[in-house]
Each structure stands twice: as structure tokens, then as C-alpha cells.
Image (cartoon, rainbow, N blue to C red; front, side, top):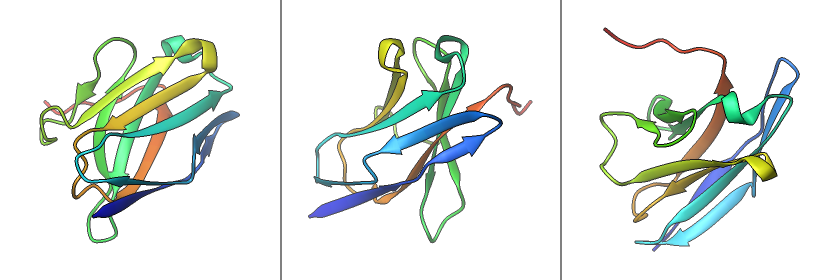
Length: 118
């Protein structure tokens, strides 16, 4: 069984985040790698967020990170998502592991700040 990821570009305030390729298809139990190329920001000090959207569901926040280990959504399946930055390539990468029912649109986003629930 194959599934696919649809990816789109995200623009904002002279910052450009471009995801490529635009579509990925992987067999079940594989790892999908989604790259987000960044310009107009200092990637080493940027908070990068990843979101997942399925047509029948609301936009879901997956994780964010500055450096090191990402902060994952507590409702995410443990070990499902990984993320990192390749500073020399101005790229952020999301990996979706052990693919099964993960067909969705994935968005990368840069935020200068964020809110947390208390």
C-alpha cells in the first residue's frame, strides 16, 4: 500500500520557506523525508514548526525545534516524527517514520515566538 504527502510553500515577512519535492509516495513501514529550504532568516536561531493537515481533520501541530531534540506534540505517536536542521544547506528536515496512515499535507513554518498552555 502506498501513501503520499502533498507539500506547499509558505511565505511570510521577507522570509521564504519552500518545501520540496511537492509530492512523496512511500510504501508502508518506510521513512519519508521532507525538506524545507529556508531563506531570509538566521536558521541557527530560528524556531521551526511542522504541522500536519488531513482533509477530514483540523491542522495539527507536530513539533517545533530550535536545535537539538525537537519538542513533540504530546499526542503524537512516540518515535513517529524526527526533525533536524542542516545549517550549511539552509534546510530543515522532517522524517515521518514507519509510514502507514500518514497521507497528509505537511507544512514547515518559522515563528519568532510561540505560546504554551499552562
